[in-house]
Length: 383
Image (spheres, rainbow, N blue to C red):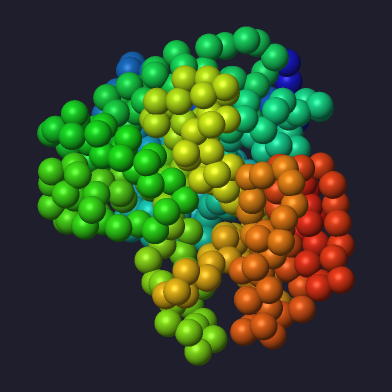
């Protein structure tokens, strides 16, 4: 079943502005399907193929000369030697949309590559499916959280999610991790990844992670960088303004897919999730992701933060727009209670804001007289 991706429009727009486009995102987020669908006339080259990769490594100039009209170079981070030769081609030929580069590792974080491609390449993040890309009606909230939103698990086929994530984790640890960093103790690294899942939606305390994993803080920082570079986790940064309050300055940790986080937590089915102590954190993770996907799918940068003071007043999500800050509370319950508004009311007083939003699992929309609007979690495109 073909899934129409919202990012198609932005990808086409980039191809008319830049000589090459880099589409990066988690493994199996649909990058290959997207670019081959949008650019069916382009030659497709998979650099995971051993023979193809050897040719590209040993003779990059000869390899690229075989594509005078450009090509789709899939998993291009496997052959970093290509980038300097690509630079020369793109400098000599100013035709737009020549090469489409995809990668499950954020290769532009590498300084030498980012300098090589600067100004020549349009950049797009493609995350797993957003809720608005799924067939309607949507599954239950618990099923969405547990199953996650990787395309292969949501294409109409009844694939076993537990087996899918087991293979995903094994492939990731055995292949992608080794490509980014030569981690000797893969068992300790996998334990670290599972411990990170247990901190979903929490403040990132690297000291406690180091103690539980049995490694030092420097190693934890390095391993977190590996998880971020390979689109497993991301950090939601705290908003910097204190409003005369002492504020928390540690980021919060989230996964790029709640299905993967659920699997790492050992949650085997949606029924188990409904009573699980991490259900609220996983729901919050899913909603934050929806806002992030909405930004990335439209070619926008990440403008998301959270705010928390030292006495525990917290706003789960702050959207920083040019003209204002939009505060959002995320609640995993279906029944609206006064407790849903407590932090928002406090925030509005100290920040001088007169509007705020509550995102919850119910299906009603309410506009309260205090300026707060209650919305179902399927309404993230409202913003």
